[in-house]
Image (cartoon, rainbow, N blue to C red):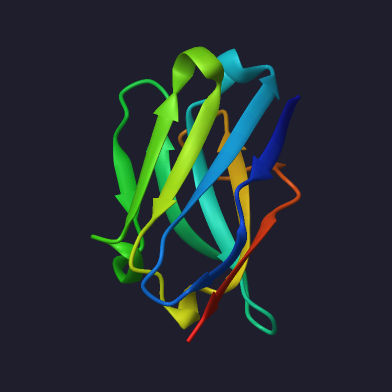
Length: 119
């Protein structure tokens, strides 16, 4: 099992920045990838970004490319999401997820942290 705890959400004005953190514990040695997802009220959860635990390759949804950066600290079992140039449409609850395989099934999830961007 893997446990994930997010932090760093909050209220920010449009154009501002936030940095989300995700602390992983448990069987972290088994992980292949970690990612960030988000869900806005009345909408489905959507992929934001992910990073491969071993080689550091990253992937982003188009709408956040150039504004968001995902990174990891393997020694601390941490994953981060630096969010710059935030827009009101980025408002959502952000979830950290982990996957021990290449299949992107994402069996492990945190409780989420709220990000609200005011216009």
